[in-house]
Length: 184
Image 1 (cartoon, rainbow, N blue to C red):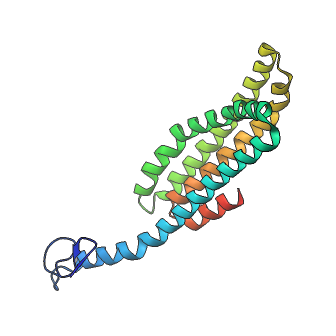
Image 2 (cartoon, rainbow, N blue to C red):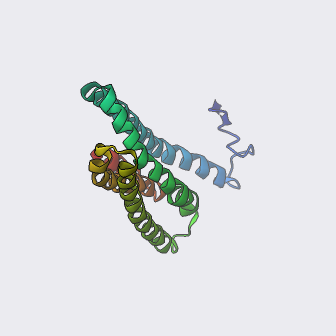
């Protein structure tokens, strides 16, 4: 009998299922048990993030007007810029290397990653704050000076929330990642 391209009598490996080939059957059962639950949490999480971002931007554009929304988008780009630094320096390596760590090495690895995240977030706070203060004096735009502190704080909050979300996925805590995004 064929099911999803796998012959139930032959199993995943193509060999006959018998007492000498129980590993392929356990592997198939493990796939069926683990992935649908984890995939559902990850897809639900992504749906929440995408829908919330879209609706938030639509509401902001509607209530702020085009000029103010344009200023907001340009200022928000500073937050997204430092978030791209975080993705390149912390998140992408963590998502690649973290799950491969042996169980005994995981606490020390993820502890080091959390420390690096705290250092990077502090650096990014200073970077956003100083960049916006400097830009406001160069371009003579008063709103930038008033936005420096709120955007620097927003950068920290955004980076920490994104880091925790990815951390939870890397440590196989999909439900906590979903809860993190739902609260955010």
